[in-house]
Length: 465
Image (cartoon, rainbow, N blue to C red; front, side, top):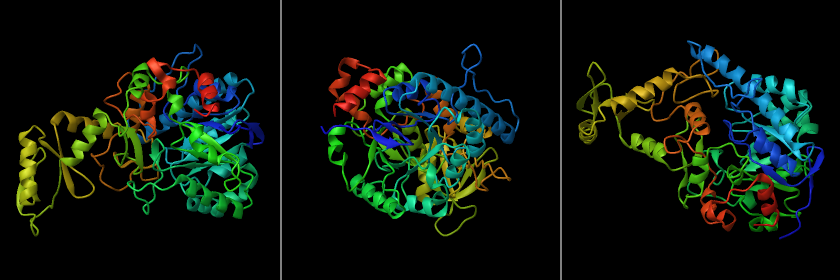
């Protein structure tokens, strides 16, 4: 293992070890503060973070607004309170050591007012903003306004070229680093482009080398690249350390910090991580964002897969081979299916999946009455957690809608991530994970269910293991 030397990032020398930001109360002030305290870079999430009252009690997120727009405004207020709370906790815990960053998603609902609301109170407590899930052109301008650094998350050299050329070059003094998030290995939402196949992963080294070449064109040879996705132990990345071709590099750990004593996830979630096997984490495209995402296969994902498999194309009137009338809905209005489609639909109805729900793609899925009612209720309860949502057809634009039919093949991401973050139910909710999550069960460090402190994890990582 090569010596792990400090690097200059965001104006300060720090260990090149970064905690990956995970939203909805998973990377919080306690976990990120503990990470920063070791001399690395902690990252708390401001994506609907938990807030506390004056007595230190968790403020439950309850929406009272009758309309989506009213609930959206409530969500903004909750998010600002939560971001401020977590920043203060992390700042106090780090005790001046390391660096502290705040993570947001550009495609989350109301990201700009939330950034302004949080940074207006805590910009003196943090070093910068990490931001991905989209093309965050304005994040540099916002960061510069509050005199904090920005750390764009990209998955290709091309994406960074576009961001820099269009916007970032105007705020070059405030770039702290560039996060390369591998779209095949990282957890959460993944930045696969239309030109890239989810089944054909590419070498991270070659993609990061291309990113460095692009950065050199812009005079950014001194700015660190933070490798994110697929990082488990540094022995596997030793050829990246002090590599002149790649320049200064730091390593981001998103999955391993889940299994620490400071991690806020439930004991049930932590125990589930210790049982994962290779193949239990996979790329899927059920997210209402439209992005691919990496998550643990559980009853929740199995249900979404089965729902999409109970799907047939339909026509509103007889056309070509869509000649079989099939009644759906409370009024039994007919749609027209192929003979094969009608046979499948009848078999699903006979099995209890009696409710036909139309999708934006001129298909119908079949669900049980109870599940169909739950889908409908979740769509009605939408609070606008995304800038645009495929599941509910919400958009934060003036019209309040994407203009497309709501898609019942997806799900309310806010509901399921809030539930898994605040309960023991790890089977019926979305559980994000990087693709190395199965290594908890194989790594001797976690033998007999050992769960380290953040400090113990950092010491382990520094050995290369």
